[in-house]
Image (tube, rainbow, N blue to C red; front, side):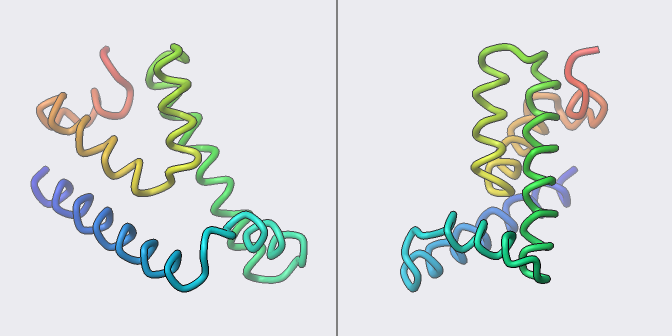
Length: 110
């Protein structure tokens, strides 16, 4: 579990640093570029559509794991818009809360 937690921390730091550099160089115009690539029907758009699907699945899993409660729906919204940085924090906290019980991390209390 320590290796997994270390991986989550490394991914979180790397993505946050990368995001800061991109925002500094290109501003906050993500949505126009993101959906513009999808509408152009090229490989960057295919990657973005694939990534958008992964964000949706992540959000759906977070909502399901939290039994579609109001808090779970709020977390799902954060998962959808927060992407991997959110998921890194969420999984890290779950790993601590569940004492590393991977089954409980994935499905909740059973």
